[in-house]
Amino acid sequence: MGQKHRFNVRHYTGFSFMTIVCLLILYLPLLVVLVYSFNDSLSITRWGGFSLRWYTELFTGVESAKFKQAAFNSLTIALSAGVVATLFATAAAIGMVRGGHFRGKTLSFGLISIPIMVPEIVTAVATLIFFTSIGIKLGYASILLAHIVFCIPFAYLPIAARLQGIESSFEEAAQDLYASRWQAFRYVLMPMMAPGILSGFLLAFIISLDDFIITNFIKGAGVETLPTAIFGAVKQGIKPNIMALSTLMLLFSIVIVTLSYLIGRSDSSKATH
Image (cartoon, rainbow, N blue to C red; front, side, top):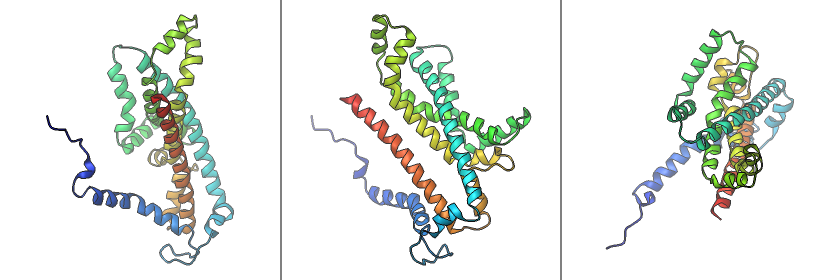
């Protein structure tokens, strides 16, 4: 029998070219925003020399108070939504993975996954109609509630993946040593799930922080988050300070996503050794 060749998509003609084109389309605009955030000129197309003036104006300029309040709203909503969504996602993961077979399990998994598969604009419109119909006042609280629900599936994925990699024999061994179910969960299962829970929280946090569509529909008057504040400022014309703010948000998002990736990778490495 001849040796079978392993499938490798990189050997296809044009793969490298298409990869480079896709990367340029995705990341070149971000690079342009980053570079021109250090532009000393008022023009967003003409380079006037390296400067940090727009970062300084972002914190001390006329619009600094608006952006600081928007940043506070974004961070507090993302932190609260991330924590609550992670708690619900952890409970859901334990029920789905450790709950055995039960009626409606497939349906339950589908309900958890729907917010990821449904277009966000549909979720935004449905949420707005629902809040309006039951009399919830649009504002900070409505954004927080919507973000909690929307972030649960994103927190669920890494938590469930981590839990699936933990053998049930650990909990069974703890109970054989006279540990209660709560003690087995608290002292055995919970520490092993911790990397997945932290990854789920970070993912939910960054999804909430960066969300625009749902927030823009249900924020109400007088409440802004960073994405909606940027959108409102851009409608009046793109200014260099907006590029500076966008760059800071981009760098912060990269740090959070990278941290989530490293935690998941470290956990996977430990599991294989």
